[in-house]
Length: 159
Image 1 (cartoon, rainbow, N blue to C red):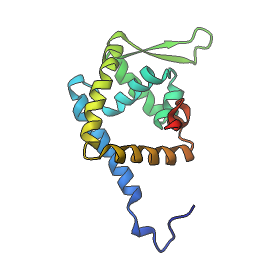
Image 2 (spheres, helix red, strand yellow):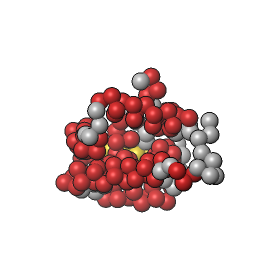
Image 3 (cartoon, helix red, strand yellow):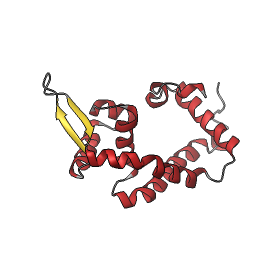
Image 4 (cartoon, helix red, strand yellow):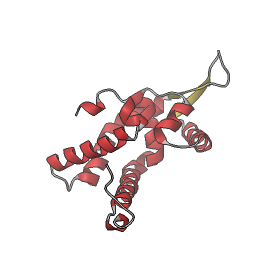
């Protein structure tokens, strides 16, 4: 359903608002994660491995929308911090499996607390019904676009 035309395109700021909101979310997360020595980008990798049972660099690339070179550098940093371990497949040496280290799992166990504080700071200005509606609308947009995280996670579209 088209909402915009060439003539009305400049009448909206939806793209900018969504983009700025994502940037703000990462800044808020960065602030809450600083004491743990990880960034919002690293948090995303760790939480996807911990919560969604994703273990290959290629799957992580699809879920986070990073190219393979950027993902390799990200995994290198997480490995240097002792938060992940990479293991080559015995069956196919080209395959790499990502696992959280013990320290990585301990950190991931704190993510619900840290993430809740960050998200409360981000959306605390909204009423409960407004937050539910915002989530429903964003989920609808992402589902329509075939977003792998929204489409892949079971039960996410039932809300």
